[in-house]
Length: 120
Length: 114
Image (cartoon, rainbow over all chains, first blue to last red):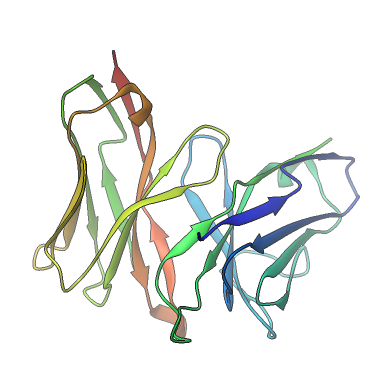
């Protein structure tokens, strides 16, 4: 149980194009999903918290117009990197928090396998 | 907000030895402390977690201890195996800003040598 998938696993795009990354909770419902960015040999940096049916909450310094987040259902959140540039190249990881059997959000976050974005 | 420090940054042990990774946190309101294992090119995998109402938790070769007074928690891996080699991250819950999120330590790169 508690499986989170991401698609695509790897993407290469040209500078100026937009890239969409999907995050799905496969066997549980998640009212909250998180998007992280990770640079080589570094820790996870939280970019934004995605709440189903409402606007995402962005961390300080993260451009919301550049990193568009949509959480349209309890099992799917998407991150769109708009007008990508080489400095956006990174490993993007999502996580999902289980809503819990009693309808109360638990603390556990389950992570997807990550998406490696390379912008040429 | 919460701040998490993790030590050491790298750890090298011989197979069969024990490994200990330590983390400290700053916010006394934090009540959830997970540990994640990340292998190269993959997402983090939750390996064990502990809540503030518990002092110790064990799962086979892995244990976590929590000292709320000192605001530190540790991961203990016994009888290490080469497949334990990975980067380990600790995290603490952060309730600042009105919602719950995790703050991660910088990570520990564990190498287990046969």
